[in-house]
Amino acid sequence: MKTISMAGLGAITGTAVLCMMLAHRLPGAPPDALGERMTALRERMTRDDIAAGGVTDGRVLESMRTTPRHEFVPPAQRHLAYVDMALPIGEKQTISGPFVVAYMTERLAPKPADRVLEIGTGSGYQAAVLAPLVKTVYSIEINKPLGEKAARTLARLGYRNVVTKIGDGFLGWAEHAPFDKIIVTCSPEEIPTPLVDQLAEGGLMVIPVGERYEQMLVLLTKRDGQMVRESLVPSLFVPMTGQAEDARQVQPDGSRPALGNGGFEDLLPDGGVPTAWYYGRQMEVVDGEDAPEGARYLRLENAERGRPAQLYQGFAIDGRVVAKLDIALDVRAEGIREGFSPDELPAVGVQYFDERRARSSRALLPVGKGTFPWKRVEGTLTVPVWAREAILVIGMLGGTGRLEADGVRIDGVMR
Image (cartoon, rainbow, N blue to C red; front, side, top):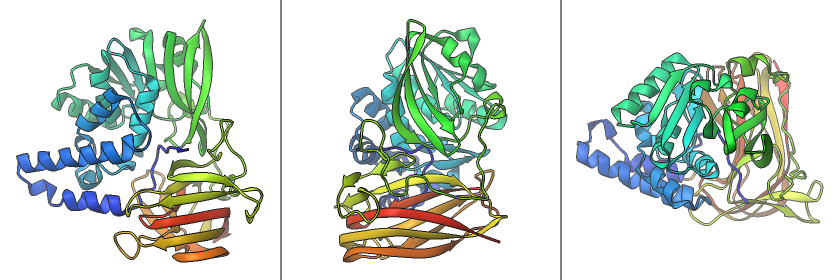
């Protein structure tokens, strides 16, 4: 069972290193050579990250294979454009990882005659992926500089069936309603009523909903005027701003960082996916009497160097108040070996972000290699004073073998 994330940690695994090697010296490459390299990277991404991750719709896979993601990210990030990770695009926003985009697109079930409303244009990449699959994409972005830049990029690349505007996505776009499909790439605490009203009978909406760090990606189907809800996977999107943010009832407390479901005991109703965690790759929750805590534990297993095997969770943290994070977990390993480099070994990592998501840094707590029985690993990571949010990952980080974990805890040490 796999979970997905809408805001990647950004750890550089062997896959990322491979992409950087293939895309070396992109700015000075001849146009033909650059195009060939990017085509090769997109093909690898589509095959190894998206199709291998579970997306099967042939039209969606073809769109992912042909949409130039590198055109939608800042120049400094282009060497990572075809790595399955979120990337900063400025204005406190990110471009979602390719698997997330493909997964949401597939669940939207796009048809050639569909009129689709997108809330959160961002870089314009999601709209570009949808464009060849539907009749028209209407996309709204609340941030003016970001929206205008996306519109210029889409126009330059020839996407004629994408219509954009600057506005509050909470209100939808009544002028062009009803819509056959609605896709929301930012998270409100509750589903906006205007979007429900603007969805056509029988239409589908994919939207992340919930508190800032406890979101669920849901699929809504409008039947007889009522919204039938299906929970998909835990997620972590940037919050929907404007009226949605003004109405938010629960604000995160960065002075008390904490994790949810650190023992992996609580699963979603369909089983296999632990609540509060997301972006799982090559992972499963195992029932076992030998669990150090409770009755279940996490298993990560990878046989190919550089492939992701990981699980994430986001949390609020205020570096002005919290100086350090004490981290502890139980781990067990079998045949752990390094990936492409000696530092590609299992670890608990924390990526810190400032309030604008313009600045970030990463700290790692290694957990060991080889084969060993259950042991308690503890360590302390420094928190930058500018940190306002964080994402924790338990991951193989490109290494191979089997890692099992349980009883994950974090505690803030005050300044």
